[in-house]
Structure formats: C-alpha cells, structure tokens
Amino acid sequence: MKIQFMSLGSGSSGNCYYLGTEQYSILIDAGIGIRSIKKILKEKDLPLERIKAVFITHDHADHIKAIGHLGEKHGIPIYATRIIHEGIRRSYCVTEKLSEAHIRYIEKETPLTFEDFRITCFEVPHDGSDNVGYSITIDGKNFAFLTDIGHITSTAADYIARANYLILEANYDETMLMMGPYPQHLKARIASPNGHLSNREMAEFISEHFPEKLEYLFLCHLSKDNNHPELAYKTVEIALQQRNIAAGKDVQVIPLKRTLPSDIYEF
Image (cartoon, rainbow, N blue to C red; front, side, top):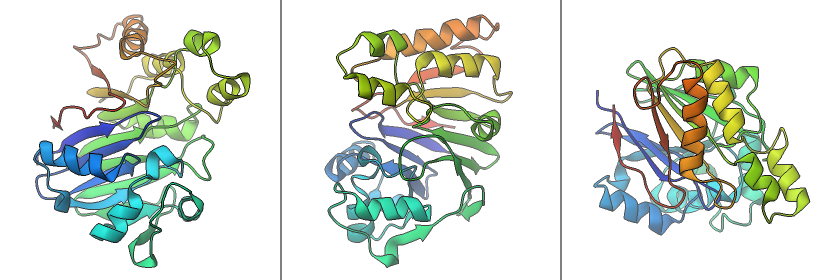
C-alpha cells in the first residue's frame, strides 16, 4: 500500500498535515485558510473529495481555522476530544460553527479504526483547552504527530518509540528566544513545561531515546522569530552524531516549512 504524507503548513501562522492512500486521506489539523488548503491540494493533484476526516490536536487558532468550512461546506467529520470541541465552539477564529452532524468525539488512548488507519490520540502537555498527539498505524507503518508539546512525558515517549515516521515539534532556539524581541511573559510561556519544545530538548531526547524503527524525522512548528530550519537541523544532526547516528543515512531529518507545502512523501 502506498502511503502519502505532506505538510501544507507548519508554524504559528497555521498547521495542517495530509496523510492518506491513493483512495482516501485525513488531515491532522486545519489551521491554514481554506483557500490555501484547496489551492495546495489542487497543485499537488490531490482531490479534496479524498479527505474523509480531520483530526484536531487542540483548539488554538493556528490548528482549527478552516474546520468550519471543511465540516459544514464539504461534510467532512471533525474528530477531537469533547473538551477540544468545546474549545472550538468558543473560538473566535471558527466563524462557521460546526453542527452536530459533523462533530465526532474521540477518547485519549482509545484506538479508533478509520478505513485502513488505526488512530490513537494521547495526552501531551500544552496550554490549549485540551491537547493531544496522534499515533496512526497504516499497513504496519506508524506515524506519530506531536506538533505542540511543552515537554516530552512518559506517555509521549511511549508513542514516539513506536514511530517509523515522526512529526515532532522543534519550535525555538533557546538563545534566539532569550535574546529576541518577545516580552518576558511570552518568552516564559513558550519555554514553560506547557509551552513549546526547543531544538535542544527535542534533539537531546531523540538522540538519547532513538526509536528503533525510525526512518524519517520531520521537524515541525518552527518559530518565525526564534528559529531557523538550518539551525534546527544542525542541532539534531550534532546530537545524533554524538550517539553515532548519521542524519541523512540512518534517519532522514527534514525541517518542515512554515508557510509553504512540503513535497509529497510516499512510503
């Protein structure tokens, strides 16, 4: 079975990931504009009609912007925990509210079978109303999505360990954040245990707990002001080298673009 993965956008301006087969697909988050989603899919020759569901990680605007349109205009069911859906209903950025017909509730660590996908959401520490990552197994291959996470808990580590393809946050460089223009309260929020994951924290964890079957590491949710793709990559590369793991050989390391789509990766 051919599995396709693409990032449509990954950063504070909007997050959206495509995962599917040649017959059907899902989105993880839909935090970019609906016009952008449609334009990217058309350019990549991926029919919107192929998308059968959207799975939401949390209720921040950069993850849910387009779900009202996808649900109400296209009849695509939106999956999230009950608390996340409550946050979505309150959100200012979802101007087209979801009707009950398009709301689906999921429970943490309760597997859901969707077509050929086995999908499990799990708790991650962040400062949304409720926050989850996703572990998705297709045809024996596992994808793990941890897009906003303040620190790696034992639960998150367990799902990371299973991944063949890992989409993991590398939000900020600690020196850039400390020396940058953000007000102190925002710096503290980002660096808190319920904020975001730094390059160093991510790289140290992956190098010390390298998943046995990991083939691709996608670095996601890079900050515009406090990070660079080259810096995130180099931080991971050096940490892996210290454990005799070669980026580009033993594992492919790919920083995802903030506002542009990635290539389509086929596995």
